[in-house]
Image (cartoon, rainbow, N blue to C red; front, top):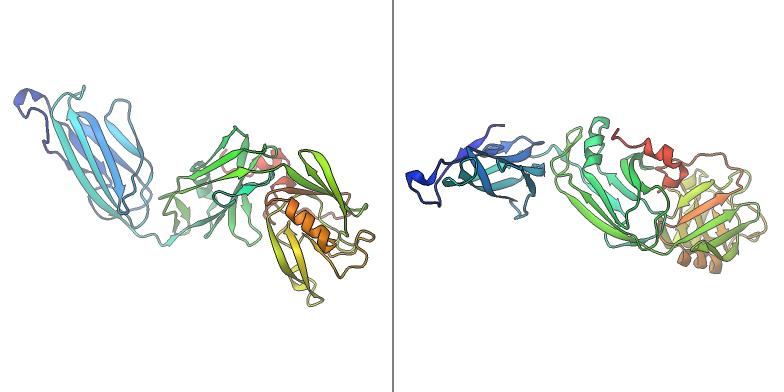
Length: 375
């Protein structure tokens, strides 16, 4: 891209002894249909910048950094698609910035993106979640392998108090690309989490571009979790590390054993129809259930099973943990979205993929770190 150069006296003494005049240049150039993928830069040739203001056509300010010597300014991010920017700058001439004052106004419009890549985030802004909840970002369009490091670097997680964690790239159960941030260990209760995605103008590959930045935050709630002991037909609830109640239930049968490991509660539904077709059992059943707590995306749930006369006696489900309706409500009310449920002593040998729900705790910290695109 070229540079737009404009100088005009708008202050100072206006006399010959006022010193040299700075020449201000703005990149991208003033004009139409500017290419995507570049930052905005302003330079003062022969002087120092005294002010830079950049706004888009919605009136939003674009932030940036001024060089230590005052000779240049560069935006924090890149230009977004199909956006008009106005850049207003002032500078004073001379190395010490004591010469004549000059000013410039430059306007340019960027090209339309072939397709805009948007994201859906979990948790939602302002939500209170359990101590096992990851930050999970699902992309509308495919993200090329070669673009992932730049996108990952543009995503920032800030916590109070400070918590160690890392981003990891995941293939969602839907087949879409996803990036999650999980803490090394479960969150401390009360942690405040802020997520900033400075994504505007970043190329995600295959014609996709990000058109906006993202900001959201959430709070970590009570330290609640559950542990299922499959042979004991029991689910024990823990708060702050102490057992607060045990519920009898029926886990998966020897043919369809409940998946093991540490799961994360991904969603909950007070009323739901259990459809056998969703877990590969054709049209065998269609049963109404209440107080359903979802673990995996493939159908591992905690739920009421009023049709089961062997609750707490026999493990005879198709992989879920079924309970009486009253007990299912206790579990439903106790666990938060983001709480963990550990399944122990199951005969299942299936490894649950991280993208099959919010299954970030199925991997060790060392395994998780390998999912980062930033080396």
